[in-house]
Length: 162
Image (cartoon, rainbow, N blue to C red; front, top):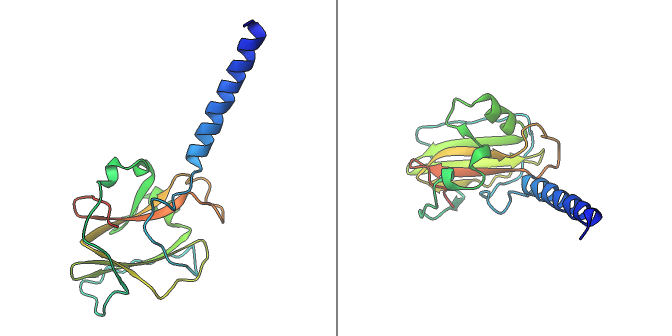
């Protein structure tokens, strides 16, 4: 193999590495994000920590918690948005969401919508839920239709809830 062959192999290797990095950064988070319903006003986010909300949640989840959020591959771009205070990066990540969180006996109820969708009347109950995170791997690219965002709920120990 001569210098031309090495040059071609080097260029192909660098191109493959770049494509791999770009693909990793733009992978959809849908497979790792908690269920999210639809939304109506993406720029407004309201969180209401009611000490004891009444009514039954629309969906009851299981109480088995998963691994700690800190051990997940997307932990570096998980921004705490409830309970507050919300960091500047958290506010930017939250900008495309409509989010309502209500504290209930034994957990929290979350209604969330993303990217201008109308908020559904369905809410998700997370037994033992303590913290809500928005996942956003590209804070600088919050354009409509991006798929680098998701939602995650953890318990008091920081474990991901199903």
